[in-house]
Length: 320
Image (cartoon, rainbow, N blue to C red; front, side):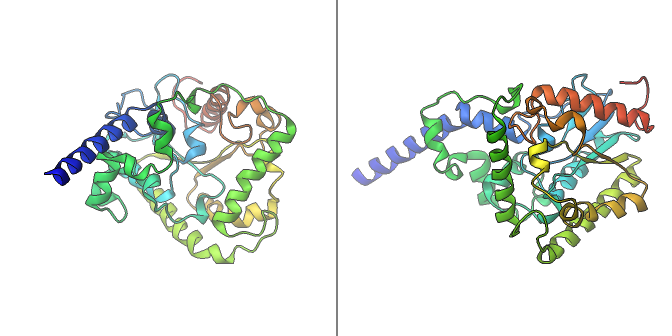
C-alpha cells in the first residue's frame, strides 16, 4: 500500500507539473515562437499569399490586412514546407502567390530529427506526413511536453514572465555586439554543417543534402504548377554585420547554386533582399540585430515584398 501510495503521489505531482508547464509563460512563448497554430487556421476569401519558411520567415511575414497565411514554423526544413503546403492545399485557391523563403543554410539540411524540433508537427499534421511518426512521440509531444523540455522546464515552473520575441519592435545594441551576434550565428552554422569557414570552405560533403533538397524543390515547383499557384523564391534581408561573414563565392556554392537553375528553368521569380540597402545599417529592423526581423522590420519588408510582387505582375488588384 505504501508503494502504491508513493506511486500515486509521483503521478499526481507529474501531472501537476506538466499542467503548470503547458500553461507557463515560457511554453506559450515557445508556441508563439514556433508559429504553431493554437486553433484551426482561418482561410479567408481575401487571401492572396501563402508563405513557407523557417525561423527567418517566421519573423519576416505578418499580414497586416489579413491577405495571407504564414506556414513558416521555427525551425523548419524544406521537407516540412512541402508537407504543410500539401496538407492545406484544398484551402488555397488558384492564382495564390506561394512564397518559398530560403534561409542560407536550408539546402545543407536534410531534416530536423529531435523531438523538440518536430513536436509542433504532431499538433498540426496527419501522421502520414510526419517523418518517422510514432505514437510514443505523439503522446510526449502533445500530452506531456514537459518530458522533452529538459532544463527549460525549471524556468517554466517558477512561471516567470518572458517577453515575446514576436512583439519586439527594435534592437538597440552596439556595433561590437552586432558583430558578436553575427559571429555566434555563423559559429552555429559552421558546427551544424561541418564547415571550416564561410568564405572558401569545401562543401562537397554536403552534396547529398543539396541533391535531396533540390528534388524536394522540384516537387514544390510541380505542385504549384498543378494547383495553378504563383511560386516565388525569396532570399530574406540581412544586416551588414551578417553579410560580412560570408564571401559571395561561398554563398554561390552553398546556397544560390541549389535553386537558381531551377528558378530559371521553370520561370520562377526570385526576389533577393539579402543585400538590400534598407536593411544593411538599421539594426532596429531586426529584433536580434542581424537577421530576424522586428515588428518594425516586418512592416518595411512586407511593403517592399508586396510592391515587388505587384511590379512583377504577381499581385493582383490595386497596388499595395
